[in-house]
Image (cartoon, rainbow, N blue to C red; front, side, top):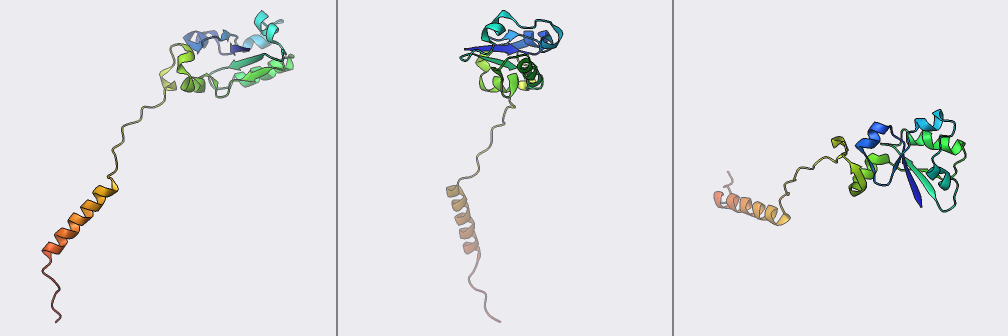
Length: 141
């Protein structure tokens, strides 16, 4: 089983987050005497359960994971690449409106390079034109 915790601030969480994630701002770990939710306590150090924390790009999640580890959580995992990378792979699991800059750039349609067959026919045509223009070998003087 997995408990997903979004450690971004409340405003960012309300814009978009992973479907089953709980809002758990990273600042909560430092400011509160007893910062743990009942869900977190039920997952704490359970051998068959993981607590996965994430933010946009791991900058907040990594320090938060260290703090939780220092407070006795051994089964903390940081979502690799954060929410932005997760969105690239699993957009169907995101709730809310994703920022436009998270979308991959649209690739322009490339024109096809000429095929080898068409290049060969072009070469043959130019050689044929050169042969017809030539009047034969030039006389030696």
